[in-house]
Image (cartoon, rainbow, N blue to C red; front, side):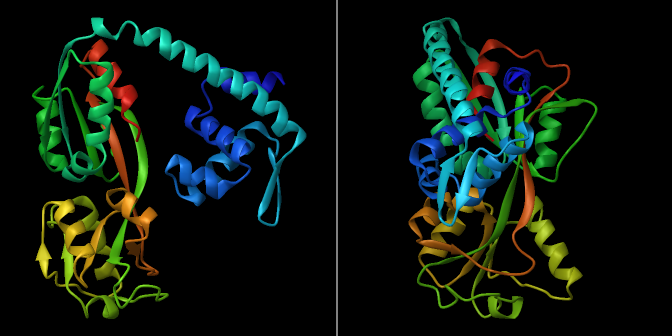
Length: 304
C-alpha cells in the first residue's frame, strides 16, 4: 500500500486519471463514464490502463462488455474517493480567497483553440476571478513566439509540432488529432477506408498553408504521391465546421473543434490509412516570466 501513497502523493499520477477511475467505478461502465466526462471511450480506457501500469495492479476485471472492481480496485477506490473529497474541500476553502486575486493576463493562442476550447474556460474563470482581466490575441505559432520573446504577451497556447526551446517553459501540453470530417448525411458516411481519390470527388475545405496541421497533411499526401487542391482555404475552423455541416464538402480540422458534433453524430470522421495525424497543444511562458497569482489561477483552469 505504501507504493500507492508514493504514487498518489509523489505527484506521479495525473489527478484527471484518478477522477476518471472514480467515475468508471461508480457507473461500472467505460462508455457511460466517457459520455459523462466528455471523453472518447478509448481515452477513458487509456487513462485506466495508465493507472494500472503505474500501480502494477489490475483495478478492473473485464469480462466481455462488463467490468467489475478487483480487490485492489476496491481499496484504490476508497483512497481516491477520500482524496477527491479532500481536494474539493481544499478548493472550497481557497475559493473564498479569490477576491484578492486581480490583474491583467495577456495570452496569445491558435484561432482553433480560441474559438473551440477557450470560451468555456473564460466563462468558468470569470465566475471565480471577476477581478482578473484577460486580453487575447490569435495568430500562428511563429507570431506567438515573437510576442512571447518581446514580452508582449504573458503566455501562449500553441497548436503545432511538439516544441522545446531553452528560453521557453512548457506549462501544460497534450497530443491531439486532426483529420478529415464530413456531415452524417454525406455520401461517404459509413464507408470504410476512404482514399484520397474518394475525397477529391467532393469540395475540400482546408486551413491556410502556414497552419501546422495543414503542413503535416500536405507532407503526408506528398509522401504517398498524392495531391489535393482545396476548394476553399479558410483561416477560421468554425467556418470550416459550418461548411461541413451544411454541405457535402470535406474539412480537415482538429478533432477537439468538432467534439460536440462527434458526440451528437452530426459530424463523422473519415476512415483513412494516413489519418488522423497527431499535433500538440502547448501552454508556454518565457523562462524569465514570473507567474503572478492571476496567471497561476488561469493555468489551473486550462485543461489541455
